[in-house]
Every structure is written in structure tokens, then in C-alpha cells.
Image (cartoon, rainbow, N blue to C red; front, side, top):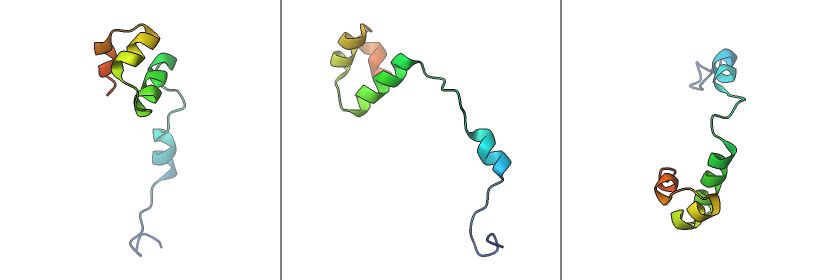
Length: 60
């Protein structure tokens, strides 16, 4: 038993039940997050997507 050896075990039902196949973010939101991760400034991202800079800052 791996649990008795101090290892963690998780029920497959728990693991597979927590994986979502649908993404709650829109395509635009995913692109904004990608650009934020790349280090782009909010002003640059907002001009690219025509969104207010304050909207973009919500993603940081």
C-alpha cells in the first residue's frame, strides 16, 4: 500500500471530476492573458484589442 508508505493517493473520480473540458474564458480573454504573460504593457494590449486599459489591468 503506497498510502502506508507515506505516498498520496487520489480517487480517480476526484481527479477526473475536477478536470474541465470547457474553458470559461473567451478567446479574447485567453489572448489577453497570453500577452500579459509575455510581459506586454496594459496600454499596448488595450490598443490591440480596443478595450479600455482599466479592463486589461483586471488580468494582471
